[in-house]
Each structure stands twice: as structure tokens, then as C-alpha cells.
Image (tube, rainbow, N blue to C red; front, side):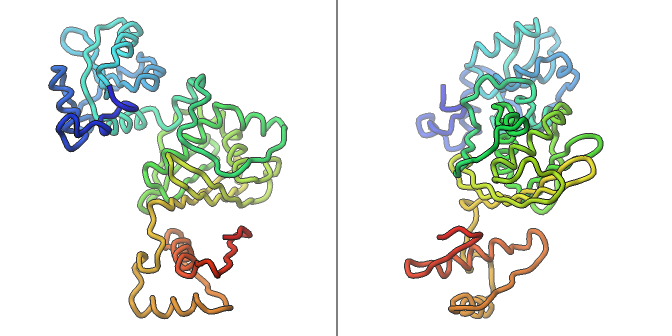
Length: 329
């Protein structure tokens, strides 16, 4: 029907401008209902007996039953008939499909099942699917038990899901915290920490997740008693992402804080960070001096890294040698 379950690639052919209009047209042609999931009543009791693997494998979500006992299922691809047949066979109910926008459907699935639920349910047969995350630097790791577990396809996929979700929601930080009751993952979005819904089974992967992130950032996976700092360079969905990672020993395990730097979504220019004209002129003279030191201080999220990146871009040219974090540029 369309590329990767979306209609955006053929909007001009359909004579519409937005994805919502495209799905409205699709629903009208198929004589189906287009639902606004944000305003729809969800019968959560349906989830108790609905196979989780169907939700993630076919990207469907049960909304409830009608007066005749038929199961209403939200889908963004009503032409995927084999998916609807699978749902009907698994639930022993007739299925009535309703059309939903992919973004709304994905948000609904994550809100009820959490990031990584598909992986934890064991749907890792497709080991070639890496969620569009590519590590841009070679990894070195020992062949110990922790290292081997961290390199399992299921753990790699799970970590990739956590990172991808954080980038998609424009989080600035990822906090993975070890608590007595289990692991908690929080994203800092617009300056506010928000706890992410996670299936309780994720706790069994806590050690493996930490080890995987240590391997990606070239840290010592055997060292669990002292803090460690590292850096990961990724390509997520075609965009280059820098992660600064700090691992902190805690009472119930190791905690991780990751700062996300999405280069493609940031304007790394001194003009772009909003300096007043007089400060811009003064700061511009300072960074062009042949020697000296500039201290950039401030609380978390105040723009220290952005300021430094912008300053380096300001003075970077073919005649200048720049080294940051021991890496020449």
C-alpha cells in the first residue's frame, strides 16, 4: 500500500497535503471509521486477554467490543488483511478495523506497554532489524559473560529502542536508575524528567543494559565500584547523535546518565544561541585569541555544550588545528 506503513510518500498522488487528510481519504474509500485515539475511550480490560505479540508485530490495538461482540481494532494499515485475520483467530472474535494515524497509534502502544515491551516479549527473531541505530565507531570488548550477554541481539535491540525513543521525543538526557524495586528510565524533555512506562520484565535486563552501554562507550564492564565517563557516537534514523555518558555506582546497582546532543536539530552558531550584540562581539574577540582559557559554567541544560560547539564552529577553518576530547578535527 505505502512505504513503511505511511502515506506521506505518495501524498501528491492522492491529491492531499497532510498525512491526516490521506488517512481520512483512505478510511472513506474503505468505508471505515477514522478515530482520534487521543479522544477515544479505551477499554483497558481488553488488554488482559489480548496477545501482546500481535500489538507489536502488526501494530494494532484493541479498543473494545461493539453490541454484537465484534472486536474493534485500531490500525494504521487496514489493507494488511493477514494481520486482521491473525487477530480474529487469536481472539476468536470477528474483527472490525478502524483507522488511526501512525503517530497516535504508536503513542498509545507505548503508553500501555512501554518502550522495549516487544523485545522483552521475545520477539527478537528479526536480528537484522537494528531500529535504524548505527554505532559510528568500532567496538572493543572482552569475551566474558557480561560482554557476551550484552552483545545478544535482544539486548542490543532493547538498548537501541531506548536510545531511539529518547531521540524521537527530543529528550536532552536519559536517566537509567537502579532502585530496590527495579530499574527506572526517565527522559528529560523540555527540562522536566519524565518517567517512561516500562514492562516489569525489563528488570532482568538491567545488568545487560549497563554492560551494553559500557561496551558502546569503551568503558570497563568489569568495573562496578567507581564512576566512569564515556562517549558514544551514533547514527539514529540517518542523523548523527553524540551521547555523553556517566556511570555512577549506587546502592542497588549502577546508574547511568546520558546527555543527548543531536547535531542535526541544533543551530551551532554564536548568532543562533541568542547572544546580545555586545556580548557576541566581546566573546568573538576572546575565542580568536592565539592562547588563553575560556570558562563556560552553568547548571544542567543551560547551554554550556552548545556554546562551546558554536564557538568552535566560529573559529574553525582550514588553517586552524582543533583538538577536543583528545580527538583532532
